[in-house]
Image: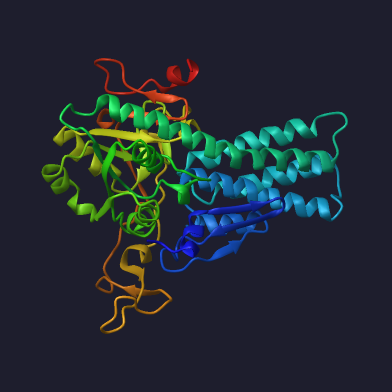
Length: 387
């Protein structure tokens, strides 16, 4: 059972008007440290370094980091004109977009907030103060809306799983990848939100989470959330997924998404593609769970999605908690160790592309999109237009 102190760490984003703190997820599950974010520059840093991660959380932290900067501007007297503040917002949003190029939520939020700032600045009565305040209100609303969207994803996803599970499965077992829970969003989660919803319904018999190398978001973060929620769960190495599906009655694999192309091709944490392949081979449904803001209708297919490549150190080094001889608890603080042969070359793409043909359905806060009979891709443009 996780202590009350540990339970508080499930809140990845702490925001109060003019004040933002993010949980440093690089230190979890061994240390719970909140880091203040006072401006867009610090917002960029916590996103780029993956102290905060998960496509929804990235967009929210980016927006709120600039909101905190706008609060500071107001406190200082908000000098300048409406056009000056609008130009500042534009330049800061452009900078924040460079922190993680694959997560479309960040780009969608930046475009929406930029357009709002432009509209606010173009009003005849606009002042620097009114533009800053409108931006702040819009950024704060994103935080509230994300939780509501996640709840809807959980409900739609759970209903879809139960309606399409094999008749032989009285209850369901779910395999998930990376971390898509409260730590990746403003609360509840996307793919892990579906697991939570199934658990609340009494329909979930077991959850499995992958380790998710090289950053171990599954073993560090998802496992942490599952233990906290008292959800029956088991951790497996990434390389065990096919063996798991051959031995256990897994009902579905459910993952999140950083970007979904118009045809349903999905960019998600590295290792997702191989899970979709093994799901197809074993006849297991494979679901992508993501808010509609993760759907990029301007990108026709996964061929056009930029895949971020990260430092070799993330693969050859690992953070853990030293274990003292004869002790299971070890020291309080974690440390980093080198685990690979010195001098070995490393390829470290942060994401891969899962073709739409391997995906059973895409679960959003608006419902579940499935392919038309005989089609290998999704028509997400029509799906979003009709709901």
